[in-house]
Image (cartoon, rainbow, N blue to C red; front, side, top):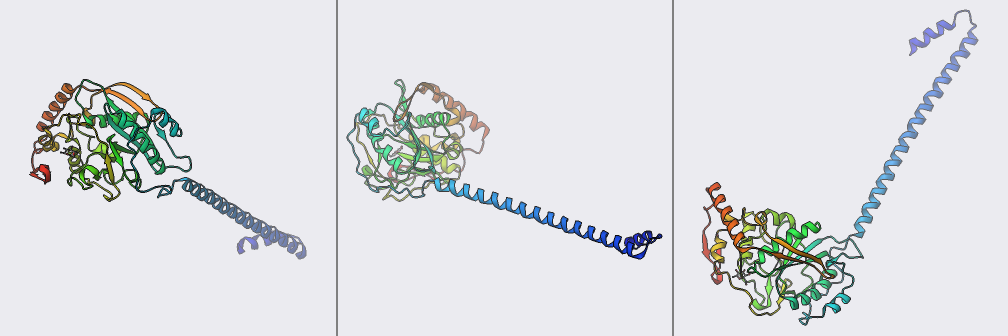
Length: 375
Ligand code: BGC
């Protein structure tokens, strides 16, 4: 810089008086100084604008997040009652529809006061239990609403012509409900199971399938056996798909829930249960209307070689109608027992051929009440 200025001074020396040269030089210095100060000021201004912008955006983001969060329903619903009185008398359809006029067509509800943390499909396997259904709806609409759950109720009704198959109706319910909407949690629920306490929150656990029907009045409020997974259970979409849903092969009464227990174990998950003093249920009485499946324990023993090929991926059924009634979605379906047993048997044969180690390591032993335990 010094050398440049000296050369410039020499150029000016050419015949000009010293005072003029000094004057020109001081102008140049002034111009340079003003330019530099200007540049510095502009840069500083830019920087402060930028940081202000960032700060503003940060503030907007934080405000949006706080707003969204404050819309979320509280972790503990504020209006729970605790222990409930079970109303076993059934109201008429007209009374129910008037009482729960906040429910949308198809038995769909979401809380107005806040954004629910849970979107749940309640799936009910059903045949000829109209009285129980009315008791169920009268009990569960207000319960689920107090729990601030976003939910829809699906009743999967089996047409005459086939033996009852609870598990298959649950698979169908899962499939059809997922076609209608996107749910994170599915609760598989018998129509005659009445929750006695609304602190038993109707949601899934992200880490493991949940058995909800822990203590039942007819079992003297004791868990029947450690592997019991009956009555009411909750699984996320991912958990249910991982185990390939329920088996389709359990016609008649019993076994399908035990089979599900071992599907869950096969997939290295455990089962969660909340305290039995809260997960209490009353079972509505009814005449025995189903033939017991006497082969159920020998079928459950085969779960290891069967679960991959018998379930959601081998499900066959015909939807006869879908009606979105005021308090529930009614799905009438038809199944063909002969076809189903045939398909599953073929698939098992293929699976056994492809998986030579599939029969090893399973050692059934006898558990309480003659139930088979697997080690
Ligand atoms: C059946 C299950 C049933 C349980 C409780 C078992 O013998 O296999 O399906 O849930 O008894 O009634």
